[in-house]
Length: 167
Image (cartoon, rainbow, N blue to C red):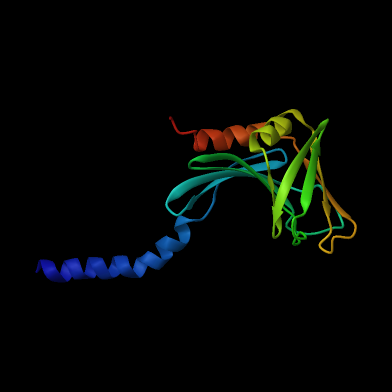
């Protein structure tokens, strides 16, 4: 009598697995802090926390332009810029926050801070981040401006949700 019940439970679990697998990686919002949003999701069974802001101004206008800070297990303060177009090979992006000029390297449609900690420190003390990069063709410039209002609160939220591991 136990075999049919066990088989039914196993069959039910197998049928439900695709639904559970689809929802497991869905982001969960930690909060919105002025111009920044903090969220968390699962990536290969590990918790990943991130904060992001959309560009307030882009020239030329593009969609999907984001500035992100991510905490992954074993790697904190990953700062990335999603451009909304593919950068030319070996392009460099400059991000200016007040007097600080940060250098980012590129890969496909993203740019990454060479020094994430320095970028986070500058974001905490700045009003806006202004980016400059070459166009996809390499001729001309693309610029974006990201507001930094709420960055510190969003960063603190992801740091609480994904605290640094003890060494």
